[in-house]
Amino acid sequence: MKRIICLLAAAFLLTGISLYAKPRIRIIATGGTIAGVSTSPVSTAYSAGQVGIQSLIEAVPQLPLLADISGEQLVNIGSQDMNDAVWLKLAGRINELLNEEDYDGVVVTHGTDTMEETAYFLNLTVKSDKPVILAGSMRPSNAISADGPANLYNAVAAAVSPACRGVGVLCCMNNQLLDAKAVIKTHTIDCDTFEGGPSGIIGYIYNGEAHMLQTPNNRHTFRSVFDVSGLEKLPEVGIVYGYANASALPIKAFADAGFDGIVLAGVGDGNFYKDVFDVAVKAQENGIQIVRSSRCPTGPTCLNSEVDDEKYHFVASLDLNPQKARILLMLALTRTHDWREIQEYFKEY
Ligand code: ASP
Image 1 (cartoon, rainbow, N blue to C red):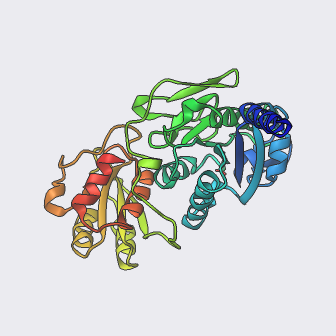
Image 2: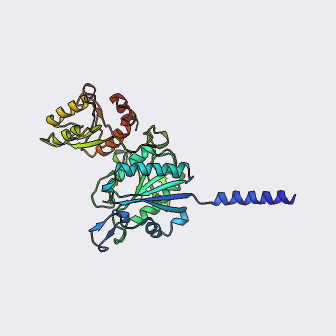
Image 3: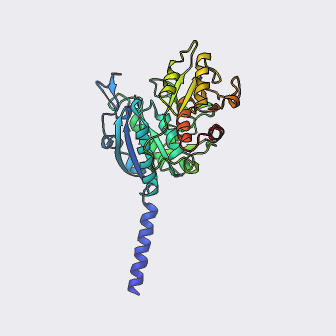
């Protein structure tokens, strides 16, 4: 009898502890201005990726109120140096943390220059519905009114929120939550630099709580077919910028180098100069997949508009800007070389 009472008491205690246990959140640091240091608190001259994960955590003593926090350093770079190898490592590590080590959510600290690309890559390759939130800053860690600590606090608040589950990878900047597919960096230096395209922000953080305004309707994370586990490299895809009287040299260089795909950051609705067009047609005939996108900051690149995509077997990027179209094309090429199937991916993801 005594033993039963003891067992019941222990079970009761354990249930109580787990009810009150804080969510376990892992912060993966990759560098960026949030980890940057400037020569003086008022100077714009600084280097990204200088301080480590422990300093980032210590700069926000309120984090333990939100979650059981731990961190690790994956790389410490300016995100202008982000590359496919780090993406593969990052996706693998997040999948491990969420699916094998039972963390409740992951926050990735990251430079803002390519944050939208990393967010979209993870949106297609993380296999979990748990929150994955990217945060960075526009001011270095020792600047007056550095925005990093508040962004990190908000990102952790998002990572512990059930409202941020199942909505794909989010960026948390300037009190706003932005979804990985739509988010774009729009200003070179302002703190209010990220926007969510035509659909706007997806939610906001207020008083340490996430409030969602809408849900993305594209496929992502736990519903994505793309699996990069076991991949050591990604197909090679380059971006060619469009402009009046454009030289065909860059597209020729990619084609001659044997790239697997080329994204055209075209003018208007994904149009490009005739010399570039001729090389693109040949490249497509030679098995290099061409995706038309646009240098315009807003609006879709429509299928079969001024360019007859069906005739040339080009793919239209639809809502994806060139840098995100590159990511989807790389992942699509890990599964198929059929332009119709690739176009379907652009409709779904
Ligand atoms: N160049 C920096 C980076 O992307 C800018 C930033 O983080 O805001 O790492």
